[in-house]
Image (tube, rainbow, N blue to C red):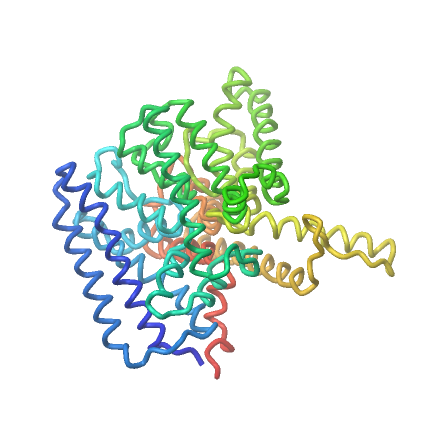
Amino acid sequence: MVGLLPVANVLGRLLSIFSSAYLMPIAASILYRDGTTAEFVAAMAISLLGGLTLYFTTRADYRELKPRDGFLLVSTVWVLMAGIASIPLLLVYDTMSVTDAFFEAMSALTTTGSTVMTDLDNAPPAINLWRHELNWLGGMGIIVLAVAVLPMLGVGGMQLYKAEMPGPMKDSKLTARIADTAKALWLVYLGMTVACMLLLRHAAGLSWLDSVCHAFSAMSLGGLSTRDAGIGAFDNPTVELILIGFMLLSAMNYATHFAVVQRRDLRLYWRDVEARGVLGLVGVSCFSIAGYLWLEGTYEDYPTALRHVSFNLVSVALSCGFVSQDYEQWPIFAPLWMLFLANITCSSGSTGGGIKMIRTLILAKQANRELARLIHPAIVNPVKVGGGAIPNNVVIAVLGFIFLYFMSVVLLTFVLILSGLDFMTALGAVLGNITNAGPGLGKVGPGGSYAELTDFQTWVCSFTMLLGRLEVLSLAVVFTPQFWRK
């Protein structure tokens, strides 16, 4: 049986810690004198007092978390944090509904990048910084950050780590202790963020605010921007090139980044079968789609087509969601291919969404094995990825996950169609949110906005983001009867 009170106790601790995240927008508000300081201080107080109240009222019921508790905590913490994170938006924007504010906060924390906000160019700097900070915190998972902190508070982190981290990261430890592992990942994440920030500021000439915000978005693969026109507002090839580089880095397994830094051996990237898959698939797609658009007459010359395709395809395929062009004006094959790639391209252990490259490779190898068995029924042909044999129980788990993932896409698309959306918008919204890419097609494409959706449709999209961020299983298991039985 799941212990609700012990989970509530840990939620109180996390909420208290989360209140410190408001310090950055408070400092920005004071620096830029944008008039939002009081709102952020009030939100910080609500978060801190709410967390302390929840902690002290459940302190007597605390016990060490069990695996089931970890899944419940992972699911509820995202909802709670999104709710708390939406408070500044509600206080600053009198006309923003609770539905839209929650959607915006959930989008930022799950690194989806979908937005209902307009006039971002003139938004208070603290609000823009807050949205992007949420992107950054959600990038590696707010739970992983907590895993590095909770051991100091006497709360074990292994259950949370296994529930939150995708793919092979569940079973491979980078360091001896789980807290050290989380800290190591965050140090790499922080170092790359600072590098991206400095390059955007000094090499591309962006302002400090734009540099910080877009570095946060790029490393988290969140895709939020300080401009309504996205990256297209800068019309700067240097900005696009820098962001492409860091998006590719962030779409790779952070265990690989840590190993490269620790061993000082860049060849480890090539030995990572997922990294090769990501770079190969994205590279071939960029050159091919650029040629396709050039031949279709979308762009006058191939270099221009390659520039715009490279940025937008890399962004969508890696579930980031930056846009520099309204790619929905391209021949329909191109945006559909980009959204398809968003489902399969990112590495496990990265900040990206989708089913992850490792599962894509396992599924492809399993399909090949079944074809071989049709010809040679007695053949012994284990599934191998990266030179290692994949146990059959892992292959079965992958098949189950992919079934649930794509059934979720189908069912949620039908739900949105029943609510009144056209097919293309419904499919685009579900794919854009379950992959955490953000922009979809139709009304929610790069030229549209999620603000056009009804409240019901917006809540469906918020749920879809969370489902994708927690990789379906971690959230779905909470809704099964077996989860609540003793």
